[in-house]
Amino acid sequence: MNQQQNAALKSMKEWLAHPDELGKEPAKIELAGEFDLHELHYYIFKYKKSILGKWLLGVCGGYEPGETEHCGHVFSEMEPYEETTAKEKAIAMVEMIRSYWMEQAQKYEAGKMAKDHDSAEDKEENDSQAGSFLGFVLLSKPEWNLSQLKTDLKTDWDIDWNADENEAEDGEENADNTSFVICVGGMMAAVSLIEAPVPEEEAVANAANNYMWPGAVAAAKAHTAQILVAVLGNQAPVLERGKLLVKFIAACCKQETVLGVYTSGTVFQPQFYLDAAQMLTDGGLPVLNWIYFGLYQEGKTWNAYTYGMRMFGKEEMEVLQADAKPEELRNFLLDIVYYVLDGNVTLHAGETLGFSENQKLPITCSKSEVLEGSTLKIGFTANK
View (cartoon, rainbow, N blue to C red):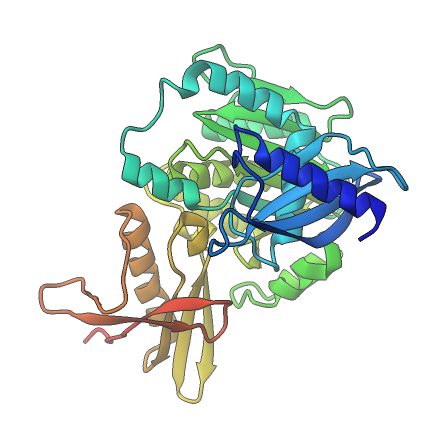
């Protein structure tokens, strides 16, 4: 490691050892990547609280060329490290810090957070293990109408960062109006205009997954900038974090330069995202905004899988070699996902699942056919 990398490693360890964070140095820590943002250099770290624990994600920077002193952007949400999403999540954390995330978090924690703490300890602990929520609104030009975005948030979702102390608190913008952060109900939402496309054509590659929108790849290829939306706040219930993300992204979808929404492993059509978000106004869960339902054919049978359940601390699911029409299979998996998220249900291998007294669908767990790691396999029975 060079001198700057060693300095970043030392700073990351010191930050994690603070009493308000891990309270000790991590049992293991490794440099996992690097990136440049806003003309500064950043380092991605993966670390473990204990030797047998999961890898977690951290970021440290930014550094001027040849310097060993960072500008204070050292942070970790202590969420699981995943190689495929580490860079985007690290960028999201940096943008949050740039938008005075730490200042706002301290202000909020000093006030209402202690009073609003959820007494349901088991559920809260499970929620806190879920990752942060983020999405990328793809733009044709590196520009946005911030005034319109504020109006759409207020009109469509009653979110106002010019509110009094009893409502959404203390929205702040940076000097060049490229980012802002707002505190809403125990959560922090950060929205940043990034004048560059999603790195390494990641959005283009994942757009090909969207079988519902033939124009997804073309839209992803055409984007030259993005609006990054991130929601943090482990004290808030995980579903509320997810709902807030959908509200902010839906408001961004009304920008004149919007091309698509990159989230949950694919690129969604803006109008589809807006339509799906209407579930919130009807008191339902916006499952189609949160979860991508993949479908692919093998011979005469169809397979389906979810992408996005891990954001909620749940296992991804697959249905394999089903003798069914693709829309029937997708709706079958959609019903299960809604049941799991709405009721905070945890499915286990060896159990059965049913939507009637006599229906008993077997649940197993094994290595995924299409995703990293293991998934729950749900037995499929066609409706007669």
